[in-house]
Length: 175
Image (tube, rainbow, N blue to C red; front, top):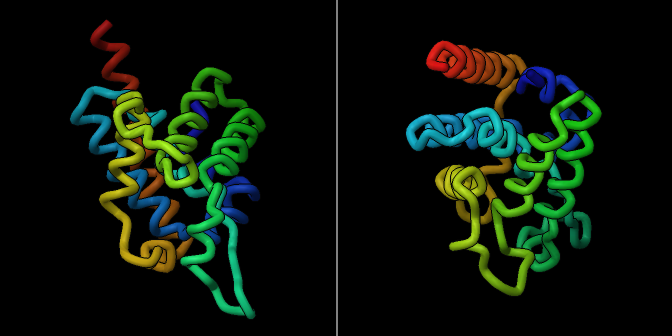
C-alpha cells in the first residue's frame, strides 16, 4: 500500500502542499477518513484524495499582493490537482485504478471552475472529499494559512495510515 507517509515525503507533495497549507490537507484527510468509515466507503481512497485535494493550487498576485478574489475568478486547481496527484501516485507505484479514483475525487471536490453543478453527480467517495473540504473551509481562504509543522503532520498522517491498514486487516479477517 502506498501510504500517506509515502505521499507526504515525496518532493512533489512537499512543494505543492505548501501553497494550499499542510494543516488544511491533514485536517480534511482526517475528516474524510472518519466520514468514509462511518459510511462504509473506501477509507484509503477517500483519505488520499482528501489529503491531496488542493495539490493543484497556485499563487495569484496583483501588484505583489496575494489576491484571493482574482484567484477565485481564474481558479482551475481541481483540474491541475487531479492530474498532479494522478501522476504522483503512479510514480509512487499506486494501483492505476485506485490512482484514477483518487484523481477523479480531487477533480470533483469542487465545481467552482465549471459552468454547471456536479452536486448530485458525485460518487460516495467524491462526495465525502467535497464535504470534508467544505467542513474545513473558512472565509476568504483563511483555512489555507493555518500552520502545522511537518513533524505534527507526519505523526497525524502515520496515525491515519495505521487506521487504514487496520481496516484492511479487518476486511481480510471477515472474508
